[in-house]
Image 1 (cartoon, rainbow, N blue to C red):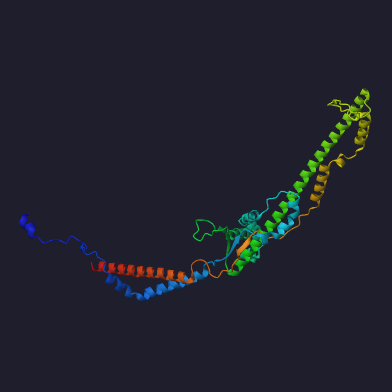
Image 2: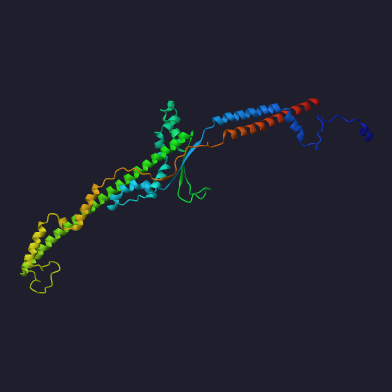
Length: 373
């Protein structure tokens, strides 16, 4: 076939589909808006359904109400009963490190104690209610409820420089989050009282331990000193006996300084008193049954030990902190409100409905195009 014949030959159909114009790829917003407007009933229905679902979810979300209290170190009015109980201990010089800062730090430490939280919650009606009456005998469920509830206690240092509302003085915020305002306030108040009572018991017990140890130490020291005096007394009697023998051997009957004589006394066995004086002194020393009778220091210490044994550390009720703010009754629920949940659900529903309508329209248009071809 010649070139002329090829040129004039009819063109065969070589494409099964029409050629898409590459330059026509712009999005027609008017067409999209028209499509959405046409399906407005569908969009409104789906959006309303999503908003209603969001409303239902907002009712099912767990309620979070946080009761909060602010505490500072105790002042004199909070510790007056403890000070009165410590008067005798202070007078008798019983060592103790009990002061406002000490009891305050003990309170914060005990408040943050997981063991104390579990001990308090184990006997709490609040946790038993959470575990359900039917499962009251199920220890695993009860323990799980205690673990979950204990994590809702918080203690935050308000003087932390990282906080935007840091206070210039020492204070801590104590809080508990529960399912309703009244229970949150009740649980927080009860736990604070429980911890304060535990601090009271620990402080009083430590004072009793300090008194017991002080009495034991003083008793042992006094006993040791008495033994030393007894040994010294025996040595003195023995020396007096030797001195008397030396004086008799030397013929010294009277004190050597009574007649004006200057005699250098024996450094080991004194004979200056003479045989008569040494004999009388030996008689007196031998007649002593209790060497403490002539020792004022030992008698004073015996009296001191007697006073220690008479001291009784009774239970005292004091507050190891000062309330800057009592446990509050929550007035506002934490977390997103119902309106926010509904608005977000409606917005998600609107986006999903619009996407569904546009996708449905695109699929429908594609099918029509394929049918025409």
